[in-house]
Amino acid sequence: MFKIAVLVSGGGSNLGSIIEHIKSGYIKNTSIEYVISDTPDVYALTRAKENNIKNIVLDKKIYKNNISDEILKIIQGKVDLIVLAGFFSILQGEIIKEFKNRIINIHPSLIPSFCGKGAYGIHVHEKTLEYGVKVSGCTVHFVDEGTDTGAIIIQKTVNVNAEDTPRELQLRIMEKEHEALPEAVKLISEGRVKVEGRKVFIK
Image (cartoon, rainbow, N blue to C red; front, top):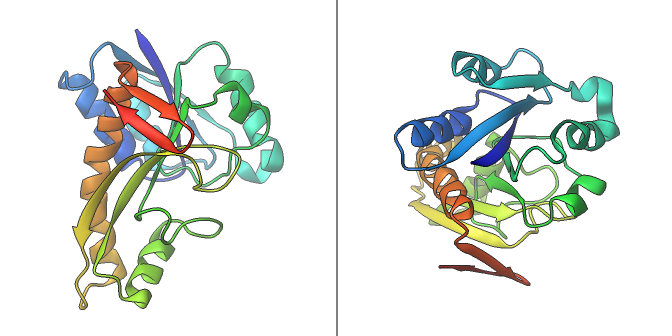
């Protein structure tokens, strides 16, 4: 059984998508062992409880810069992959080395555009619309020591309309996120992803 931990900070719609894709059999022989949130009382925790998944809160206001070490203490030796599904804290330190090429993140733009420090949530879509690009989307990438700098696994695109609001664009991209993140989990769980430098090869 391939085991994953999902890290969340909000509503957990991407978590919900992974759960549904496991239930449907699209993702096989995989279990979510932990859902860990850096924010108390978010709906993602409710999703975990409703699906009998062990859920833990590590409040970022309490743990601050130590949150990565606390996560590592919980999951070390117990999971094969860490999935950041709308997790706003930045992982750093030993967990990055321990889980090299075994941490993935979903970002709501086509990296390297509109990413990096401060680029999260609705802010990404505001910047996208301000710039006037015609295409945006989402990126699933490996997590390294930088912010949104790891090797890219999957990208999916949407058209950007001049009359879009940030929320409208966010919802359209979120639909693609719900496809891309389960797809990445499936590919990795099946051993079909190989990383060479910045290039990711899918068998």
